[in-house]
Image (cartoon, rainbow, N blue to C red; front, side, top):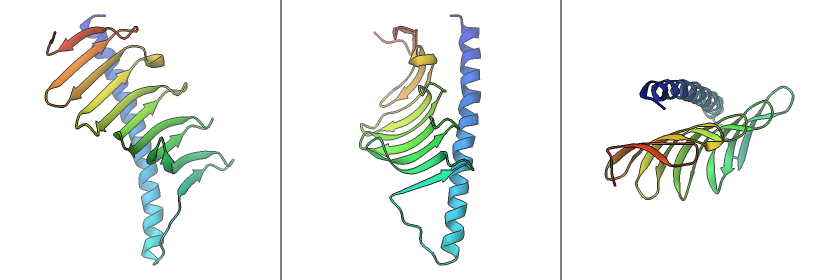
Length: 155
């Protein structure tokens, strides 16, 4: 894979990441606005889980327990989780998923102190990973999980 192909793939994935991020932020903003309206009326909303449904009763947004912690899940019309924002003992993360349910974009801050951003290919095959803990690295992986390139280069 040449540099131009990598740039094109990253550009496409970045665009998709921004689109799904906007969906997640808009959904969360609508939830905050609804709760703010209730709070302005002197009411408190308390629940172990909140679900936003479409006119057909499909759960489109969930706020509550998720993956051993708590978070927000945005579903597609088929009920598949397409975006998750959550926190558990391992850290805090945002994942954007494809129609098969595989994470294609992920951003996380881990309990061990490191943070990263990953772009994955279909079925998690191939990836571009930007990771920072004490030093930063940018790594590219092929479909078999082997490192194609790493910057800065390390043994």
